[in-house]
Image (cartoon, rainbow, N blue to C red; front, side, top):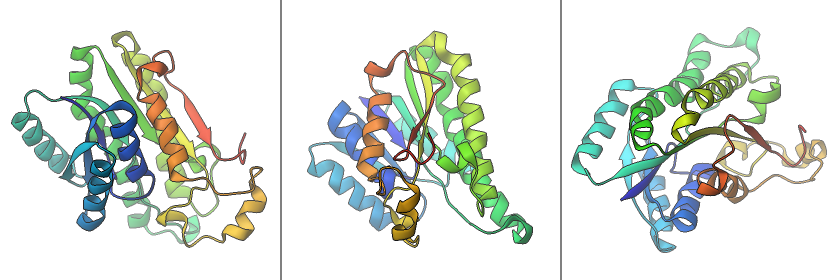
Length: 243
């Protein structure tokens, strides 16, 4: 059974990625979520509605012990399963000007995006190398590429993942394991719901926010065998806002 794990798969971009990997590539999808079981179940329903299969895995990516415990248990219970694709999508924002930023708002954002990448990827990387195949795709952000005022924590976390993407790609390329990142701009999700869309579209050459499905299409391509000669790349998907 060939599987794909998507962290933060219950809503937004993560939900769309789960659907695309099931439909486009036929993967059994491991839908990770931290707290919102209702949203995670809805993602699973949408995956099954389009003919896919999947299951829910609840753990906090920032908690190394929880990651290892849940994933080890699942792997042991499914000895025929091979996780070929890992999508590190989980992330949070706690925006604010740096001069007033609390340490917890700094740390929690780094813990989920950067340490979460480490915990989940580290669990699977040796298995991928032994299998001589794997796709690791990290969802970063335009903030991690260019920096965004009021998001020093989020920009730092995503920039850290970008650096790790480039380094890890060079380590594992010989074993047919690719490591890439996608850097969305303004995408219509819960995370951008509070933003002033009418004002922000003036900054975007494409004159609109992106759709989660558009990001998922890119992730699906990078998760496929068609992308086998692309690794260490950070692909911007932002309507031209930073190009």
